[in-house]
Every structure is written in C-alpha cells, then in structure tokens.
Length: 466
View (tube, rainbow, N blue to C red):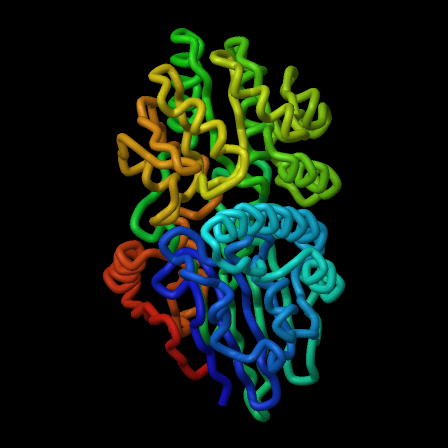
C-alpha cells in the first residue's frame, strides 16, 4: 500500500514538501523553503522530518524557492539521487540556487558579526555554494508531455502549469502489483490572464489530486481593470513627482511587468518615467525566458509583436542595474523612476533598500503585484502598517500602497474550480494544499456546494493512503 505524508504547505502557503512511499521506493514531491510566518525558527535545527539519505528520487514542479529551495540542504544532509524537473526549470535552478547561496552567505556574515560582537560563537549557514553545485549535478530535465519511467514501477510526466516558465503539473503513476494508482499534483496553477504563458494543461484522470489553493477564497480583478489601475498609479506618480517601487519575483513577475509596461508605452500611456530592473537574477532569468519563447502563448498578437522586437526594444529606456553601485545610485533619484526589484515579498534583496529610502516619502507609490505571505514585510504593508522596521531602523509608511491582484501568476478561485472539475466523475480523492486555512475552507465549501465533492484539508505531518 502506497502512502502520502504532508510535510509542507499543509494549511500553509510556503514550504511545499510531500513524501510518497511505495513498497519499494520513497519519492519526495517538492522540497521548498518556508517563508514569512511559515518560516522555521532555525532551519539548521530540524529541516526534515525524514532521513534525506533514504529518499530515492525528488520531483520539483517549478523553480520558485518555496517549492525547490531546500534541495541543496537535502543534498548536504545525505541525499544523492536524481532531482527531476522540467527542462526549462533545469535551466533556471542554477540562477536561483547560486543567488540564494550568495544571499545566505551575506546574511550569515552579518549575523556572525553581531554574534561575535556579543562574545558569542559564530554559526555556519545551512548550506554553501559547494552544496549547491553538487545539487545541480543531480538535476535532470524532462520535456513537457514526455512520460518517463523513473523506476520499474513508477512513471512520471510533467505538463505545463502556466504559472511561470517551466512550471509543471506533476502526473505520477504508481504500479502496485495488480493495480496502478495515479497521483496528480497541480503545482502552482497559472492565472489565465498571464500575458506570456499558456493556460494550465487539462488533466482528466487521477486517483488522488493535490490542488493548490493560494487564492482559494477569491477571484482576481479583471485584467483590463488592473491595467487601468496600474496606469492610474503611473499617471499619479508622474503628476506629483514620485517614484514607483514594485517588489517582484525575479522569475515570472518581472518578465510580465516588462511586457505590460511595454504595452502601456506603445499605447502612449507611459509618461516619461524610466523603468529600472534592479535585480541581477531577474536579468539572467529574462535571458532564459528569451531562449524558450517557443513555449509562450503564440496566439496573442501583442505577444508576437513583443517577441519580434525583443525585451529591450519592446520597452525603450528600460535600464538594467547590475552592480551594487548602480542600485545604490537609484536611491538618489527622487522622481520619475519605476523600480522593479526583488524580493517579491519584501523579505530581502534590493527592494529593502529602496523601501528604506522611499517609504517615508508621501509621493512614493508601492505597487504590490503578487501574493504576500503572512509574516512578510510585503504583507505588513498590504495590511496597512504605518511604521515598519527595515535593517533595524524604524521607517514611517507615508507612501501610497497599491495591491494589483490581477497581475498574480496564481489561478483565482473560479479558475481553480474550473481546472479541477475536468477530472472524470466520480471525482478522485481531492486534497487542498498550498493555502492559508481560510482560503482552503472557502474553496472546500464551493466544491461541496456546487459539485458535491468533499475536498480534504490535510494537517502538517498527516499521512494518507494512496
């Protein structure tokens, strides 16, 4: 009898991690970091509830670190098997992992200086760049739609999830003697309004389905309204002379924003502001996006024009700030700048410096374009804080905070329902993951009321049979 244990993103949004055990194998589905309120007090203390050396294979749905970010630590703790993901994600992970290792090293250098000044012993980071390189050597990319036997009794296929480039829906066939059981994991399903990507692939057969529920309690605002609101922010900043700060994920959201800003420019609605991409990682990711443009939505006429012109020509005046010195120079610009920088939830990275220098200015506009986990600075700003601490300094929040949900790369409630009801009746066993409890319960009620389909909400550490 096969089993499934929920070790992450169970009544939480981050830290996706699920252990599948069959008679002969142990498969880890996702290995992500926890962020915001979900974050462990000390990742070194007990990062895994299982022995990494006992795992036979790891499956990663996409490159975002809350789904993939603990693979280097898993390798450091003894895992030496294959890591399967999509071909595109295989190309993105080196960028993600090396950047994360660099930030981790810097964080621990600062932490150790404080400890040593207090007369305490320095501590080691959870993993190093050497662990990253070993982990990358274990990654294997598989093209969309290619059903592959990873063990004699287990087959795997990745389908396009439409969330970010390379994101996947995971299909897993478990041969248990006389029966074959099929598990489907939605991964993070994309918003059908995403400008560059295809809609999530349709799946109709499964015995058990894990469905993300990030926005299980709401629908996104229509895209046309979101673009109008975005344009309104741009016009307000132009008329009053303020800067626009946009915290954005380096993978997916930044590239979408380049597209939308370019579209506004071609419509004559960008009023002289200069756009800065202040994220070395996002710049590298954009190069990967350009290499795989054949995977994008080819039906959109604006997109075809976009690809004909290329990233740089699509948005004239787009400036990439690579060096720390170039980034710091932006803090001397008091007006006319649209600065897109990571991290997307304001938990680190260059956006923190820009917020420190601009949040207290009344003319500043901060545009939130993605999900903000509870406990992150981004969520605190969305919830209306009037004062925040950044790098130990108390900063007054006088900037205008705008939340543009229509730019989200996640499916809204209706889209989640529409994707799930493609499964043949009677529906497979359905488990809601990757969501806050309120969002999960709201989605659960809609499944019951509209489809008489009881969706289970697993608890952290719960084991169920497959």
